[in-house]
Length: 406
Image (cartoon, rainbow, N blue to C red; front, side, top):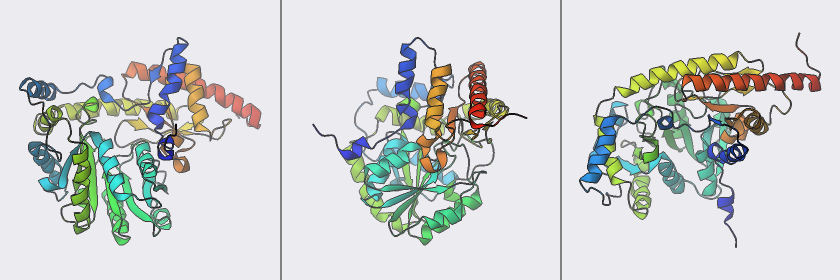
């Protein structure tokens, strides 16, 4: 029996790597999971008022289908949030989805055609490339400088007559970089000049350590579509609730406004009790957010310091989210084979990370991604194991390559 070629090509490195972890676990080894960005699994608990809202909704028998576009009260609350970030938006510009992933799927299905091209930063969150390829489009990576700024010359050189959309992820997954206002403005200007849709993923907008600018501040009448959700900032990962917002000032989005909701109707609706709870997430107490950010900053600083203290590893300080994306020095044997590096790290130490090439081969190779959500004692143990592993590889690599310490 045949499986479609488009399904064969789907990849998701963050979870695909778990198959190897299961093999390791079967041998009796203990695993330190640093691969999935799920704060709710690492002591960051969903706030009580959000949990109570969900329970109350279920107990009040609000267990029926919601409107396909989303609960009206939730859509209005989303308008309030995104308007505060600068986006021109009305309730009719909002579509509630089962997580950001479903929203991205709907957008790619609506924008991509076989032979078209979707521009995305290198590195990028894997579903951007997977959904583009699934709908017959070609993902095209544009370069980010070492400091996280977009390389606009490289971006311009990769725009063709087949280019359909420009994807922006800020704060970025996997690097944690945050685009500043000037960079966002230049990206919007380039996309507008070439008549490209702009998909901007701001799911980590509440988890930032420095200044954050939403793309709505610079969107004007550009065809900007914002993706966001409740998984990260509101610690509702398993609840799967996200949304699509379209810039109400853009007439270029009129066709999208008509057609994307058709996909929402086909899949019926998002989870109603969760949507009711999401209203309380946006309108209820927000005091868990600064506390979470403080704790994450402390863990970030510790992990970055430890990694930069390892010979052969370098790591930039991320400005948001909860990932670091360290670079592997070419002192090592097969240093550019980051997947092999990650698998050997797992088999030698039980520390599970994700290979950088899983976030785009052009600019992710030679790196690996670490989630720094676990408690500090777990992170300390993981850093000790990684340092020991890296030290062994460095010695072996130097010996085989003729390189030695001086």
